[in-house]
Image 1 (cartoon, rainbow, N blue to C red):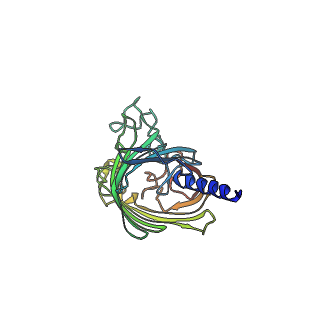
Image 2: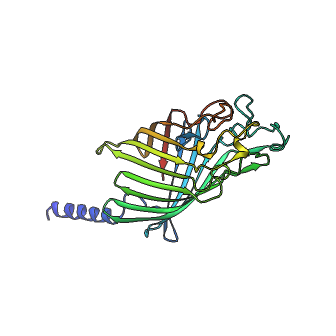
Image 3: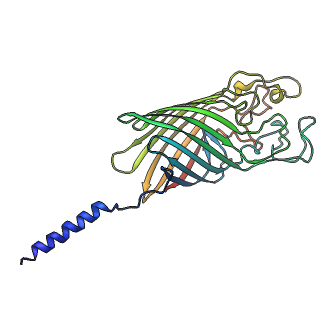
Length: 302
């Protein structure tokens, strides 16, 4: 008998077994939901153009449950410092919101502190692929900041809830988010704040490189917040001063399952109010947290 026949049969059997056995094991599942996630380390944490860690490194993680029907539920974690880095005094006499020092009764009390070092997010919704390359995404996002809030004064607990609606086509996504909680990231009387943004992630052929571009607008309603904007002599502004635009331009590259991203961001966020002393986005170190900066991250999905 020719040796070619058993060789051919062996090759055919090997190909058949390979077709039946996937090269990689399927992802874990829970009640029909696929479990996935990612881990990220970065030079800093940027959220809507604002540094959340005052330019210091960040460690982040995310877990995702995705159902074939389109429903999903996710949670994510990151270190932060932005809340306690805020200036509870004025630019000429700075006092950190995380400091136990008194900055004037009756708003602040001696010996009591605030601490918030972690952001924990819960979000979920439904994605509908209604046509080729088109996806509609609707859901809710809850930002939580576990910590101690004993000495808030003019500030509020930063926990915030948003509803969002997104529309994606291939590598372009347009999204609108609106706050449905009473306050927005610690700003009193700021429910209804919105964020509209356009994000582009343009792949450069099969090179593994992706060009990133982003623009967004945070809009606070013109609402009085005298507890914050009263500088001791007169009211120097309102919540509209917290509105700003943010921009990002970057490049990403996938290398052996890791995504390396380098991005430049900038905003027109205001440092101070009209009296040039009461701070808006200027922290206790005297830095505008929305200033132009460059961030490098490494992300691994699993």
